[in-house]
Length: 314
Image 1 (tube, rainbow, N blue to C red):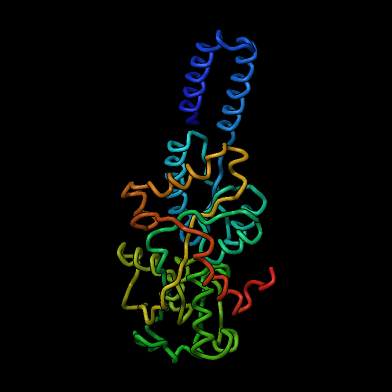
Image 2 (image 1 turned 60 degrees about the horizontal axis):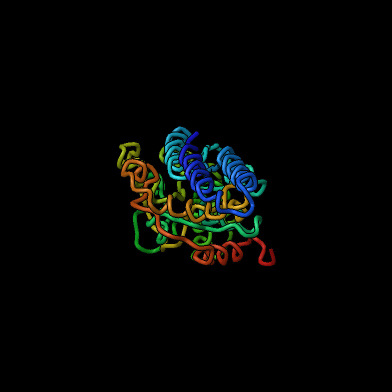
C-alpha cells in the first residue's frame, strides 16, 4: 500500500509548525494536537482502499490483467491502496457503483448513464480518445449470404441474430436503434431468433461458429481480435458499420472527496488523463484518455429513451 508520500508530507508539516510554535500564544501543546489530528485524518484516508470495476465486455482473463495494471498505476499516482474487482455482468457493475462497493468504474455509454442516474453527483471524468466517435460492427456468418455494404443490410430480416450484453451500448443499444430505424420493427419481430451472448468476444465466436447468422459487436474488440489472428474471415465478416456515437468512460462517485480528501477527484482525473504507458493504453485499446462530462452522453440518454431501455422521467 503506497502511503509514504502522505506521511512524509505530514512529517514536514509537523516540523515546520513546531519550529514556529514558540511564537504562538497557544503554545506547542495546542499546535501539536492540531497536527496530530491532521496526521490521523491523512493516515485514515490513506488506509481506505479505493475500489473500481469495469463492465465485463470481453474475456475475463484479459480484463483482469488490464485492470490490475490500472490499479497499480493509480495506486502509485494517488498514494492510496487501489483495488480492481471484476463483476459478472453489466448490471452488476451498475449495482456495485450504486451501493458504493466501488467508487470508480469503466462503463460503456449506456451503463454509465444508468449508474449516474442512480448515484446523484457522480461524474464522467475521462474517456478514451476513440470513445468520442465509437461505432458498432454488424457481422455475418458466410452462410447468410449477406455482403459488406455502406448501406444498412436489409437482408438481415428473418435471420438469427445475437446482441452482446443486454446493457451494452455497442453490442445492444445502438445496433437495436438502427435495426428499428431501418427495418421498422423490434428485433423479436424481425429475426427468427434473438440472443444475448453476454460479451463481444462471445458474439464473435457465436457468429463465426454459425450458431447465429448475424451479430453486433464493439468495433474495437473485433479489430483487436482480428489483429491477434482470432477471427477466421472465411467464416465471418463485417457487413455494416454504424454511424459514430460516444461510448466508454470512467465514471466516479460524487462523494469520493469526503473519504480521500478535498482534491481527490481532481487528482484522480489528472491521473487518468496522464496515463501514457503505451502497453497499458494498448490493452484497452485506446491511444489516450481525454476529459469527459456527463453532458457528452446525452445522445445515449436520448437513444435509450427512444427504444425504451430507460425511463424518460427517471
